[in-house]
Length: 310
Image (cartoon, rainbow, N blue to C red; front, side):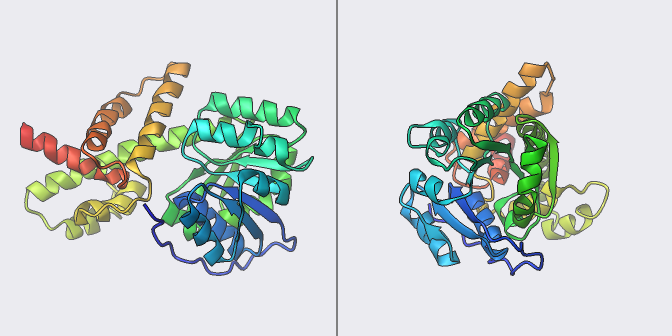
């Protein structure tokens, strides 16, 4: 599936006086949006993705397409990693031709994918052992939100390393919060995605109820969004649910991975998550029905199917 066209961001008024060459490994929806922000801030971006069309999209933005992960690592001062699976993140960072082995001494790995806290902590240790710096910097926000500078980077890692790269992170998103050592930011991201999942399902449930009552859904959203019942996920995903059109801002198949990471993290600290567990069942039903490539708001289809069978 090709990249959905995102708006080209306007050139930022707070351009850094220091132009850096930044690597971006993983040029899907989120990686593309982050790269566009860096380019708008005046930085040079060299990027790699296994899909040629993603590399071409970066080149059309004004970035430089690299031939491999090793090529990116050899050309960039910092390398951002935005990949869909834990295995791909581990291989790209720690593999024989990965960033930790091929980047220059003193380079920084900025891990921005949603992975497990345990893997994040191990990556930080092993990258440091190889003489490179590491930051744990997942993003909370959809790709469309990030493209317009609306979202937040949750940062973890050594405070001095964070401060050195803070201007770069703020070029990607103005809101950046350091929450502690590596691993803590990833845990906060999982907590954030817990709310994304539950709130998106709540929006789907509420709008399904309104639809079955024969109500005008755009008018219902006009009432709900600014009121006490409003939420960011109602604002972002309510219109998609109302239109029954689900262009991916977060693909359901990727979000299922996040839900399982949330459940694993909750078990590790003994936290009960009954709403997330119930939500996982409905998201999984939508995935089994063939909606994995659509936005996670397509969970409304599982609700409709459940209502039809009851």
